Length: 139
Image (cartoon, rainbow, N blue to C red):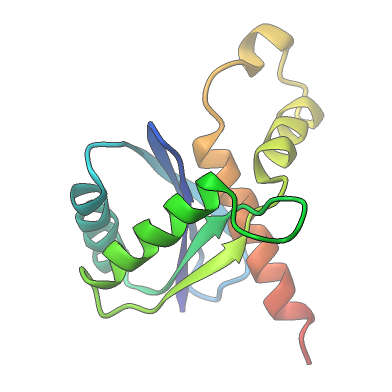
């Protein structure tokens, strides 16, 4: 089963897709934010096109473990997406996904000048990788 991961941001939405065996995570694309419903419809359409069986949306939390502002936005997006598709939608802790994406670029040897820019797609890969690793570590 393929899994689609979503890094929901205010301006852009990063997407990553697993392989059919849900082992590998690869960047898919970045969608520019239009509105919650339009964005949800685009993600739902991409999920159908890619024969996805589960959509995982990254959600961030504050120090007390409660969804922060971005996390609440992600939850509202998940609700909107669920109205657009029959594919199950699951929220997943995305803590440090952007920092992990930045560290990955550094580890890949990407120079400081090329490292700038958006990390949305790579952050979605980090969310998906975290989810897949958690699923594979369960008995």
